[in-house]
Length: 141
Image (cartoon, rainbow, N blue to C red):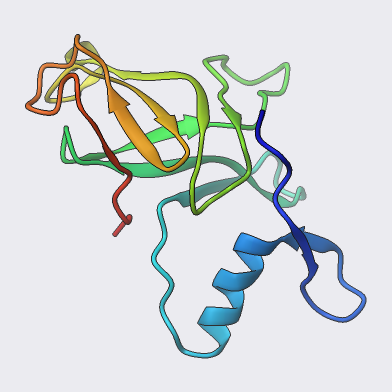
């Protein structure tokens, strides 16, 4: 079972944020680049509402595209779909359950994988050359 990410204070008096996010923001402020495995997907659920992270994209080396997983539950008036559990660790992410992309949905390949601890385990039903292999999650562009 994954533990919660360490917490640090982002700014004096600010709410606590996961250390991984704090380190990325610190690197940005200091002009350094920090490799990222995930790209947050954000939107506002209403015109007046706050912008929220609703999921994440990661780069798939098997397909050569980005895959998107939703991590925030849908509101009752939104069209449903799968929602993944996320361990909160942007440097070594884990999503559950598996991620499936299929040509019927506009993808070039069938890609079925587990993302665990920053690695992608491609299952045997993938139609690309990484089927059956486990590789590190690459940095996202």
